[in-house]
Length: 130
Image (cartoon, rainbow, N blue to C red; front, top):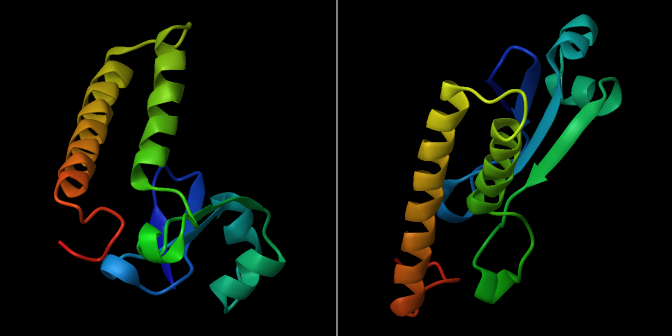
């Protein structure tokens, strides 16, 4: 199991092996401080049995046309972060860094949607075909 670090406040565990498209699909986010204070020899056992899970993220696993919708997409998570940052920008916590992050997230979402539109045009969206 891999652990990912972001801001020092949380610890992200990748809880499955790469599958369709060579990507993992299951992630758990826990409090880093709580995890570190209760860590044992087994990270999976620790985070499942002793540490409060902040959230689970399950991504789409397999082609939609074959598996149906069974998880979220990269685009879903990017859209959530865009919404949060715009909320901060429209309130007392607006700043240059949020605006720059928004610009790049909106560009990322644009290009992912562009890729989807291209796949739809070619009739391969929702399949394992390239």
